[in-house]
Image: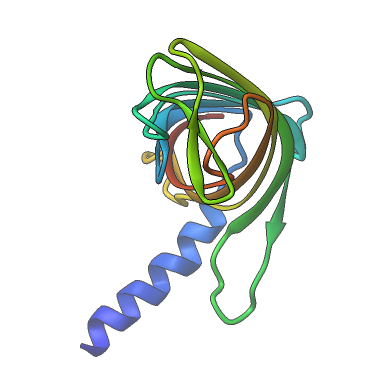
Length: 171
């Protein structure tokens, strides 16, 4: 047991030294409502600001497609107790959704259905944590995020999505 603990501590210490920032990433997003692909690109070498694009299948109503674009800011969140290289992510964006059948909104506790082939548009926010795997030969980032949103055109029944992401990073 002591040997395993020692190996784990050494791994965290040495792997933290190998941690490199990245300038782009592409991966998968598994969410409560929307799951699909995601891509991120940073504008500056310090990896502070960038854009993230998402395209996925949504489970809201009877299902549909959702595309979103975010402007994000990412910065290191250092927690002395954990000693993990975790980044905090915050951003704002827009989305568009397409729902072929049975899309609805809630009015006074009841579902009010739109016509088939409904389109929705709205604004989003994103708040999350991202862990960049600190092993050079394993260039992945794992994240969790919350995405509150509001729709201005054809408001829907939901306003908050949670997700887990796995991205391949490019240095």
